[in-house]
Image 1 (cartoon, rainbow, N blue to C red):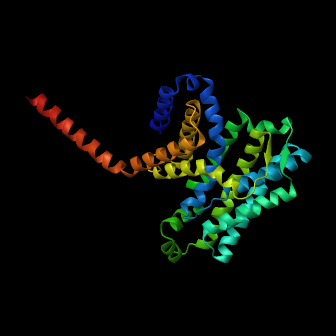
Image 2: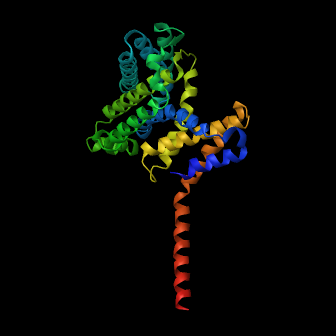
Image 3: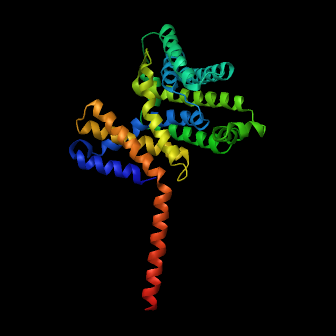
Length: 314
């Protein structure tokens, strides 16, 4: 849990000591990692069920637009309820389209992205600004407490509910789960709905952090899901080591460290994407061979213990 972020931090500190060695960097990195963490929690539910849901960014942006507009009119309750309910509703719509029409989840998510991007633009407008009296929720330290609450909610829903047990069963072997009486289509619908709930929470964090929201089009919202998706993929590869509630945050924090370090080094966006891709491949390769590495460590311990006993006898 500690090795990955510490390794990335030390590496970036060596490569960019002037721009990365200040105490404020960790605070900035933490703040920037919170929104991808919450977005990643939502993506976990569909990812575990074997569904490809790339519509999280569009739901977050649309939820931020709707919640922000209600927040301007009704204050903090309008911002929170508007964002969460909008995210939940859009997640249910996505799940409904998938379960009713039996379209591949990747195709559904891309089509839904185009629809949600246009709807938010037509209803709210191109840009929305919210007052500082309600935007504080997206600022430090309030956003830290909200994400902590979201992590607890995610842990309970993912590890302590019947729904999560059925969700993992569907993702592992859908036909067997269906034979055992699991309502697989209903579980998949709930996976999209619960993801939408977490996307809604991410929405009011996002609009509060930025102080506003801008409508997007032509699948531009896809770029917002890449960082959380990488965090989720790495965390799921490491879920045998620690639970996803911690893993998603650790990987999101590590990726945020990497991004800020690359910026401090002055690398352009294209090279940042190259380095990020290499980082993903190396981490996944390490986790793929973790069992082999563990066996070598165990053999070394046995050999060391045997050598130590023989030296004592001698």
